[in-house]
Image 1 (cartoon, one colour):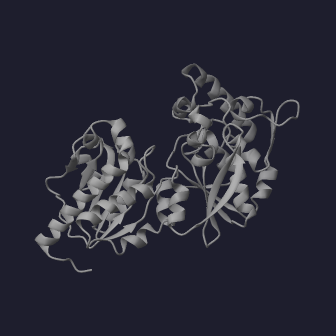
Image 2 (tube, helix red, strand yellow; image 1 turned 90 degrees about the horizontal axis):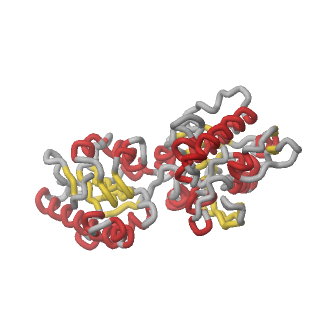
Image 3 (tube, helix red, strand yellow; image 1 turned 180 degrees about the vertical axis):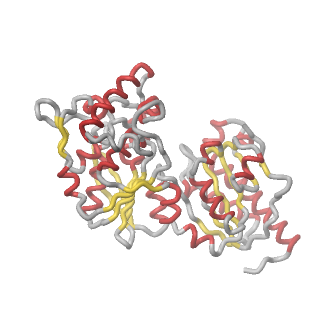
Length: 398
């Protein structure tokens, strides 16, 4: 792990005399939204390089922040009241684009951050509210709905999502099953036609970078169950429940091994049942944010997230930002709470230099508490470097 103030390649020093800087960070989970990260960096850069033009393009990868990215891109916010992960009603929102595309987000609707008091409910948390939110967008006229999957509180196979859209999931007595994994254990018959009819003429799009199958050691229960409150001793039982329920919902067995079926506790499986098209979450959000158009006028790009690590390189937002920028020969800088990639791995990711907050704060708790302050400080240092480069090289043509 690298906790130095900055990491850079000796062969690729910061050298841009940038006129326009594109700020395209992801969230710093638990401490700052992507928009707050961009604003804090902008304050610092403007303090030491006021001549630099800044473009804000906060990003996400399908998890929390996806709706915010859409709103920043000009989508319109719409409110809704839905069923939260533990059954309590909660305020939710979705974003509507001028082309009729809606963007909804699992994380803030039925995700871990939506749990009352943050208390995990591994056996009973439901995705019903996500189905209700999709239905609200469709009822309002959306003909395409992008569903950001990530940060789920539930391992219910998306059964709640299906119920929220009208599907009839019944137990042996012909009664609708209850919420969560415990309810799923009672599933005997399923009628998905009402959900499919509600979505007639609507294209669902899955925005997620999780490629896990539904079952197995890399599946919904094996990998993600403990994050949602399932004890190690409950994983085998959860796996068996998912397998039996999947056989009821998809007797052909074609979908359970599909990449991404295990995303969000199996919500990916439910969306595949409804004919959803999978997309890279980072790619989908960058497209709706107009990232490539912003690149047209940028001379340098700054990205980042809570931790730059090996997971970042597996198609997460900052890696996709760097790939697209490097394809246009634009230098890329990064800022993160922690930098766990050495200089060679950063170069492979096409990132010239990375700053961390952890070493500046003296510890993770302080870094979390002072995130925006520390980001502004890093921004001032980046701005100073840019001004020095301008003095050394002269003004680049705009």
